[in-house]
Image 1 (spheres, rainbow, N blue to C red):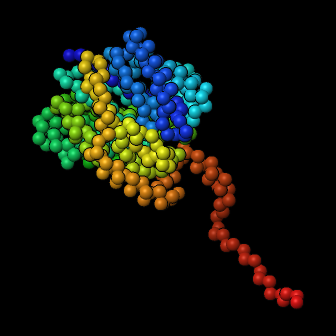
Image 2 (image 1 turned 180 degrees about the vertical axis):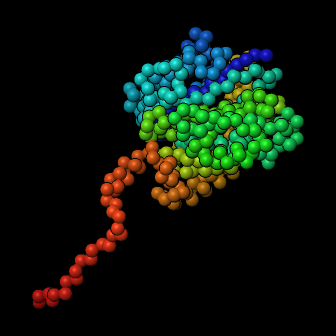
Image 3 (image 1 turned 90 degrees about the horizontal axis):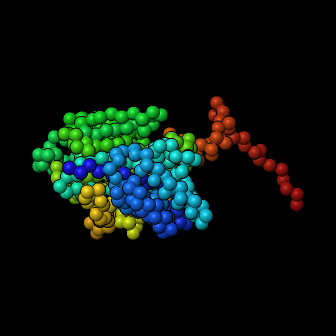
Length: 382
């Protein structure tokens, strides 16, 4: 069997007219850079796309996860794009570039990445999901539905290859040092949910079939953990394998038919519905959103990407998008109040603490009774 590594590395290095969409000249620069990587035999194949204002590099190679030359190729691509973005003064140029020099791979340097090494099957369909204006935990619910919910994935009940369940590798992303736990479904489903429901802390990193076959990989990079402050949302990516003893592509996509609430949206400070959209709608406008996810389907053949199919560019998702926009409308009416605005502990890396700091020294330990102004009872002169 052919062993292939799939790497998806993304970064926001600048966007057109605000946090909206990647400009064409950055696509062109990225394609030129990755083409050089093919010529130098660093990678086998690539596809360049976007999720809103994030530039997405989808690459195949044979060098395993964390390969230094592959990550450096991505880093150099982002640096070249950043230089162009700054020349043209486009918005937020180099936003996700949080280091001055490359240090072996992109982890901890700003860009996000998801990778997996697979032994190619007779047919190898995969889906790449890329979200904008949200955080890694945005994929917790759909991935749980794909691999652990029989009401979503019929194969869990009727396919003997899925019937033994899946193993979830879950990361505590709030720890300074990465910490992981392995949990098995269906046996530990309730414990898995106990963790994954806290989407701001526990996120899925990998999913394996019960027999050890890798089935999913998710980026879990936290920008504020690197920068120490809010510099943009994390905008996760995920790689999902489908069919032949795994959830069918239709079951994978079914997990996105409910526009569930995720953290992010405007200034990374609001909850909003995750809209599944086609690439033509992969631009965030209303209130810098709403949060959205695009999905591309490929066949992997001897390390080459065949495709893609724009998975959410389909009328079958129109009702999901409509429901999502109704939810967005409702939440916008709440304005700066919770639950539209995130809870205080989720806002600590945004710009809100600077505003609250100016109020802190005005608090006193006794209830304040405003002084009343004495009423003027004197008669006015005629």
